[in-house]
Image (cartoon, rainbow, N blue to C red; front, side, top):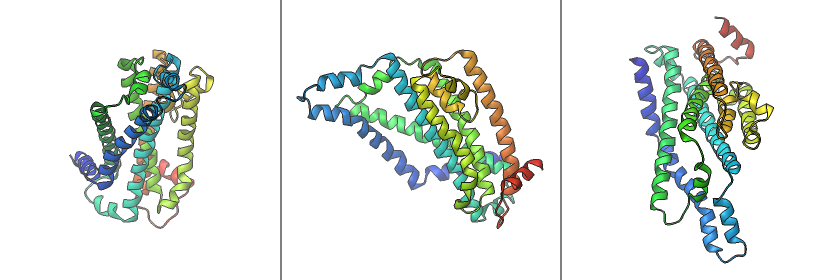
Length: 297
């Protein structure tokens, strides 16, 4: 019961913040404006030589070009979801630890309940925000007098959404849980936010490499790097999402998900041990040796 109360309290407190409301409302309008620029440009330059040819090129794409564009879009959206909300878990823990709020909260709540509750509540905040963006963009397009989604329609028309969307959702959630647990452990062993850098780099390198690999995968989905990165847990959520836009063998998807799921379970368990041991330590600059000692407890 306390676990559910933590999730509820964390979730409600976050969606009521002005930063959440402003970001949720402003971002779709900015995205819609960017999507409108091509149409506005072509309307303003309708008589320019070659305009019809350029516009047709944007709205009538080959299957390979559409798959590549869709792969890049989904890879970046997944990167934003994992990094933005995963790092939010870390910043929240660092802030509460520096203010010593957790010492009072742990009188009635177990540390692991707090960590898992924070991870799940932030995930719900992210899902809420992405859903709100989708609804607002849909409404903006419905009331718009210009054809702003011709480019998007050309990208998404050939996608097999029945199999693609569930896989993307699963990879998004598993990828978030993997990195959020790592970010939670980093927040627990860090003091001021400047101290997070020594632990943050090993976590950031794989996700940055995954983005570059996904871009390469979008144009060359069958290359060896894409294949191996599809099974490495730290890169598979983003890279496999990119490959899914072209179609992937079922056994590859199932094996990738199985490896990722096992890694998530192991990572959350180890991060929980680090969190439980390090969260109330103040005034000591922790090292990797300290972390290894926490894992032995």
